[in-house]
Length: 498
Image 1 (spheres, rainbow, N blue to C red):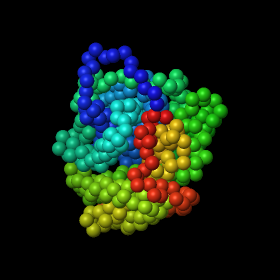
Image 2 (cartoon, rainbow, N blue to C red; image 1 turned 45 degrees about the vertical axis):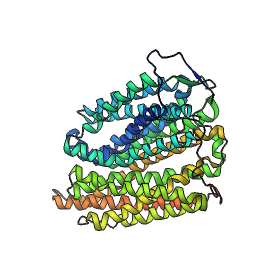
Image 3 (spheres, one colour; image 1 turned 90 degrees about the horizontal axis):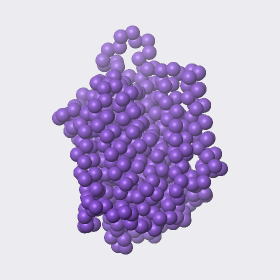
Image 4 (cartoon, rainbow, N blue to C red; image 1 turned 180 degrees about the horizontal axis):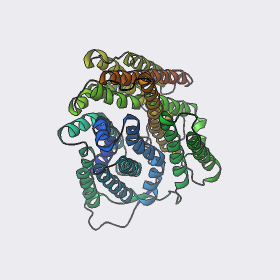
């Protein structure tokens, strides 16, 4: 990537590298934090905004869908318009949307604000990596990317705890307001210290049509699936939503393959079997794990009666398990290669989800929930490095950023689809358990909820078992004898530099 300085900023001051890295990491922390911080707050948010468990999915899906749909487009923006300008635009959109979410007084206001937040995140996240790529060179670059990745991981890991503390000690609205001081600090630091650079070779065209087609198609699909709970699969309106989804998704494929001069996704990269397998496994396994946090949130607070703070702390061992799994995976990857780790990780995940499906309304956290959720979370961490390696191992360097961006999008899309499908499965099972009861007691209602969670965990186990069999299609030897962990180029982490 050839970068050239733009018009000097009169406020710009020479900044040490650690400050530039901090500017990038603060914004990335914000973006990742908001994927997970809302989980613990959902029951409290639902009471204030009139959201039941099914509708509460959209507080998560609205963010994740727009983030995934516009992520690759955001990477192009950073190259074309300059890292500083795009960074500031992303921070502004994200911060203002956070304020809007925090002051929301209806479900519609909240969902719209979360969608705009996701758009801001999709613009901001690739810009943070572009800042690192254009600032650090040589041996310093892997260290900088490592710090950026660690902060991103920390954002996801502390989200549940931070959400619980803010919700329990102040109000659920502060899970959004907390972004405001971060946004102000990031903006002031970028204005004062970040020099403008852009990619001189970047295409002048943005595939906005492609981004809207895939985001609209997936949104219609998920909306249709979620509404089958109340309207049934045979309803005309459901068929209309599915038809709209098909138009969007098929239209996206046609547009990218035949029309777009600078497509978001160059389908030639899927000629790489390791990349294709990695994306399928990420779509399946990533989606199953994404749903686990949602159902455990409600189990902790609705069934066990935990407050938000205690529920937040209950997720802490799972965050530790993910970190341990990631470290073990990175250490073993060069010795074992990718496929054994994918097979072990997906199989462990299946065991964890099946174990979780044995819960009852009387289960305890320490004996019945912590052990299986720890196993499943460890498996999740075990899969990260091998999937990143497989996705980039057999693609041209010029496509490395695109390959990793597609992998990241697969994870977010898998999360939305899985939450919609498993949420619908759980809601249907709960409705069946309550069928015929005119005025069900609280105890009967709790039993019905747990039956829904059990069915969802059973289905999640089936999904990760499918991921196990998909992993068998990965060629042997991918990632083997690599002593440096994942084959990550500067562009590989989020797809900013393609």
